[in-house]
Length: 324
Ligand code: GLU
Image 1 (spheres, rainbow, N blue to C red):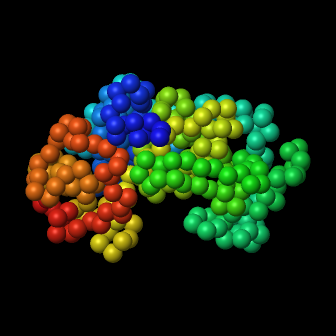
Image 2: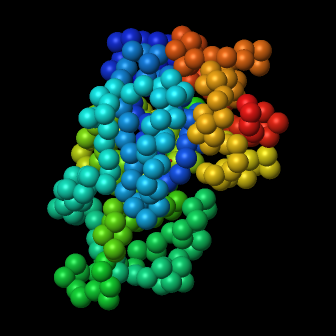
Image 3: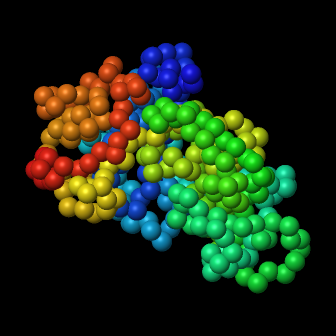
């Protein structure tokens, strides 16, 4: 078993460096808080370190006060981070690092420019299984790089046929993906120059020396891509754990501003943060219903990935609306 299992076994010798990487595009909601709690507990339960990364690369969606509010919410919940504040990495400051990784991939022949429009791609491709975007049919793969482009080209990663990626997720177990069929040649930098999440996250996980990635289960399907990308960059990937998603009463995706759900609303309403931690811990499988107040520190000795539910966890309006 990998290092994630070792975290359950509290092997204090394991070198563990985790991260929590929120996007400052809205308030922290219960799902984000529950992922942060899992990431924090997984690190602290093995005496490891955990750092913060602000994923503010997708600039139009970034909200001005969101980072500040998320940091306040996390602190209010009782979660602390190593190397704060100087160690908090901001993706918006990392353009040079992404450029140099892209250059390394380009030099290795792993990438190619693509000037296909969205319309051309959707007309030419078969719809993909679980991805919303169609699988790119590879129209530009064989073209020469020195041709003239119809529009500023995107940069795509070349996925060789039969690229099969397998990994063990600490919560969801064995995962596998036939990348060439499931995803295809994915974009590393868009035509407008914006670096894709997949590239940024991999470059940052390497730069921050992350050994264990904990994040929401909505990103489970990105992991195979990131493992392949890490290998193209000449390194071995970290271990992965995907924390359960929180969904609305009818299973719908949580809207970031749904009423009563942002942690900040609970904080502003004077709720005791130990109540919120207890609610998260109960939903995750770390506490009984009869424990109304808990602190993150009290949960450290109880933490093991084996206890964590796969979810999804349904918001219960009678419990999760204010006041909690
Ligand atoms: N920034 C992403 C989010 O807020 C998480 C990315 C990751 O942890 O890899 O959902």
